[in-house]
Length: 503
Image 1 (cartoon, rainbow, N blue to C red):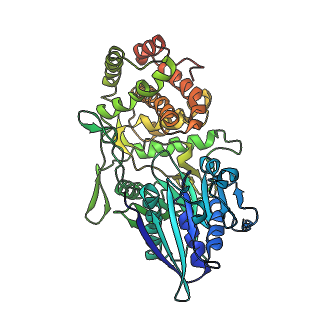
Image 2: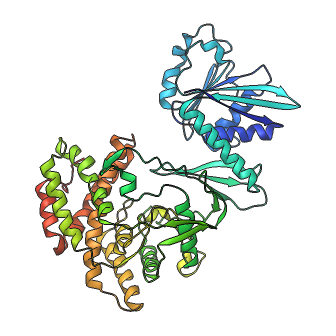
Image 3: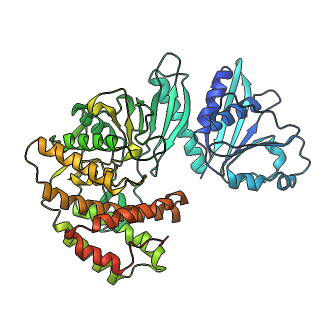
């Protein structure tokens, strides 16, 4: 793939610092930045701003490595700063630990020409030259690194066009998807959140000629977030206000809802918080929701149904990823057929359940507790772009069996009771049918999560998710205890799908 060439004019040191932020937000482990330029061209200034951005420390001491040859920094992504001016041979890179540096994180290299042909792979060549009282930077990078740098520059252009020219950008968070978030700040304004949501890459067909994301109804663009955000705000749910948007590129500048932890200081559930979230769900489930939601003038999002195909493709992740790990062999066709037949009979019972707008990940990481607010406004809700019209009980199960934190049975029961009480107070509500739907959706969701968390480890190199598996198995056993799930419970027990110590 030919290298893309990007240029930026840097009129002053502030612009160089912003370039460092822009580059830092584009980098991943294994990337190499080769800094070219004469003495005094600004290479060390750029390296310093980039390292400080990665370390989230504007005052970090970043000395030139001219005499030490290499300086290492423990940042969000570990970074090694090399100065090869005094290198006598490219082979000396081995003594400096260059390959180890790339295995750990990122390498910044000044005087890269002294490395010979040793700089390969994910490489960006950055040239700084004096120009018109400032400096011109020319960046040549190919493949994914070139695309990431180009997208980061596009975000900077978006901010400039949105009235945030000169704003400071800092990494905020990422998630299991390709989305990432930044905190942007500028003097005189409250901080805002920049959502970077590239269009979804659908992947290969997995069933009936369709990719997984299409069958599971994963949002393909930021249009879904904007439309659902608007609908939720109109219904009285506290979601981020959107100040600026670029629907084509997937950039949003949104309200920062705060940093109040939904959990307590020990990251454990707070009964009152979970009950408040349950009452918010009760309000939402008593609200009629349109299937067609407006994102912008002339642009609409059709909210998909949480249909049988989506429910089944999700639960199949248990056999695709979790089962082979615990059984030591892939699931054979006979097991898959039996699994599908049992689940289809379970889902038949869900056909009569109440439906509503289902956010799909309504749990602690996506809820911000705002102590200074009143009523439902205490709860700031984020991450809802994959919402569907489906069984209302699903989000209650997502909350009360929180995948990221252990919710004891008594707090689960109080959370569900708060929801049921609020629904009964609002008019007719079939609590018995809800209880059955709650158990079914809890079993479906926790089966799916077992598969996803193993996939994140095996396929995506994210082993941290495995620590959650004992909790998810315990939730699954709770759900399977419902009488309506006796057949499914027997199937899971027969195939050792819920025993502790599996992984």
